[in-house]
Image 1 (cartoon, rainbow over the protein chains, first blue to last red):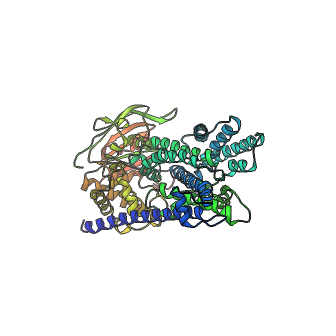
Image 2: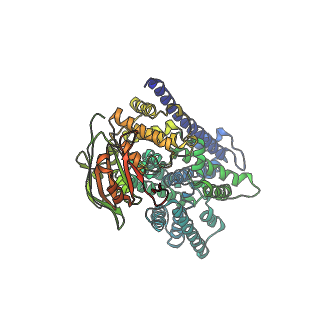
Image 3: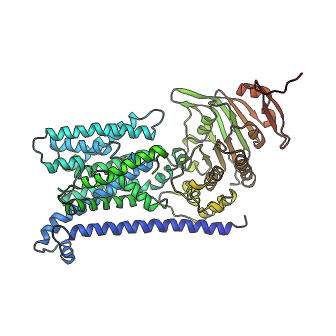
Length: 346
Length: 269
């Protein structure tokens, strides 16, 4: 008991350093997101001077810029930002809760379920607007429950859940292709949106449901962030630390599925954004705090960056999902090899 | 923590699904003492500890903490009195010792509450008690098995509970580390007055380190009391189906079980 005061100082320092590191990473990611947002607004097929961009944002009419920035680039940038945040937060919530990077909603069928629902609602039932989102949330939840139920045997094991999810996901994806092939009027653009995700048809009014979903579902997730952190040490330990494990699980599943479904109903399942954001955020944040916000910011950067690359930096134009898909696939292979070797953790 | 908490198991039955594992268990855990639960593999001793720490709900009966059923107590409130170290806790990859230990403060924090000085003090004290101060900035993955177990115990200590349950805390440790962990538990018991309940495999260590022994056989309490009363040749045969000779441990004076196998006996001519 001689050194208690020096131990105390070290403990306090360690804690302060951790929170400093978290704030540092979060601010850097914020800056990166702002940079990606600004580039999307100013630099496309043509360059728009920042002054003009600001004037357009302030509501002034600038010949030429008003259309290009206000009508084309701004909706794209905003929808990319919001959808990226939604996918990033939802993805990491699932990965942390199930303690496995493969357990992201776009691997275990939740995203494809929500997408299939959106396609069905739009193409077959001719629904639009918020009803599509609600339908998509409902089906997304149903798929999540089905995957959970099918993998349940004396408790849901992570590995079984992921395998069942991959199977369910493959089934649903073939259903999406079938739906698209049956649709009477569909163009390539539309089909691409539902197969790999795209922000090509982004419109400014679509931002509202995304903002609401981030506020409600994202807020729920953030209110559970400490419990989620405790779950990383195993269900038993979390339980012992006073986490209501079942309750936390339900809140997380419903909120994450909500975030995914609302996003998917607008842009389609932008490939691997939910899957990639968490692991990238973990490498930046380490164990210095909650991963939800950093992962959301990573997701936003991925979608904005991927969309920009797809539009302007390649010989022909690709939707954002093709780019993020190309980024995610090698990582998926790497993960499967690594998980096989040493067991997975985020 | 001067307050002694009363943990009582009352007509408890529990199991998984249709399968009943525990049947009509009645136990009084003596406050401020060390109690070990012993028994053969699959006899239900871990199930008992899991039910006593509300990881598992009973199918009938109660576990009462200070007269109140733990399965009806808000889990966060319970976590301030009843601590548990599960058999295989998971350390998030790359986490440092001080970070892990600080997570023991979870039950003392609500959704928006700020970190207080007493939180850091509890962590520092837990590190001192478990002699893990030197490891403070190290990553868990780099530590030896014994060090790692001490760090997990430190996390449970930072929780500052009057009762601490441990599920086989010495499994996978070599004999020196087993002693180190058990000595640490006695320190805790003596300096902080913590009531300790643990599941142990090693009979002789259980007899040496416990004030109370509970022997479980096929989901029922077979013997319960001080090691001197409980550890007899008949009890060992009933619980483990093993022939043995019980002598007095020359080091501690507690009973010591010498198993008798079919081979390797001194030939009497």
